[in-house]
Image (cartoon, rainbow, N blue to C red; front, top):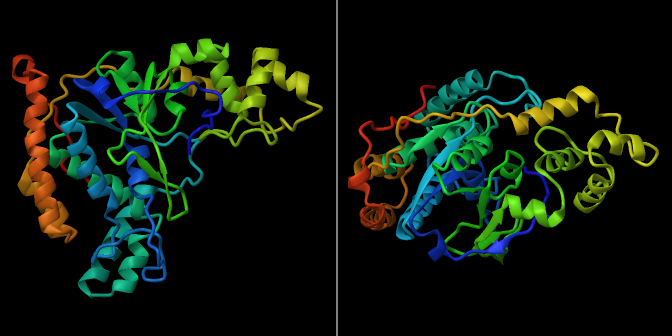
Length: 365
């Protein structure tokens, strides 16, 4: 979802040439979700706005990852994909056992396919118990086949991406959301897309975009607040961990933070004008802790970019999902060529680590 800070955070244009020779930590769930944000002009075919293959499963995330990695390598950029771990209790809406739900749905889906029951297979493949977990599973499988390193965060992919930048393992974090800034990410890149256009949510229209760069320290200096106050400002808005205060938008929240300095003083000073009943001291402190002291991995033996494994790429995309073989072959060939050119720029062999990172082949569901 992401906190709405676009109206107050300063962003500046950045050219792809300025990202040459850089390593970028990618907020994988955020970017993968954007790959699913496509629509059919006629949704009555599948009763969904997502593209489905003949197995009744979504596949745009697979093409999206293939194209994105090919593009990044062509621009001499090395990616590291960060994935979510456990779900915070503040973020979790439902407390059902998602893993067991997926296993059960996966079994039912396979049975439906074996019986050629496409209607039931489609219903299961698009269910909340199956679709997103399977999308993440397949995304990790494809990234492993492409040779891209994966970091599985203990909790939040955004927090982990920010940590990689803080520790100078990567130069930037890439996410369309602003939550990485709440986790203290020093440098954030948005709109990292070859097409330079983005589909408008829920519409069959596109808007022009350009790569943008956010320097957290400079942005906070410009708007006149510190990191602690930015988190308090976000609490007033709608975030993954709190629904926000009705009637308070980004500009109002910023004005209150500057006037009162912290959220406790805002509640005291504005309690006659807004309903703060959903907020209490413990909740405020818990959300602050999530952003200021996130659970992240801080030690890495090695982050290693392997040569793409074309056999495994074709198996997942062409054999399993029945995607267009010629298209996959053409883009994979270009990706492999770009990979080696990219490594040459990074003088990879000179600094090649002794330990190879064990990226995930598949999730043990």
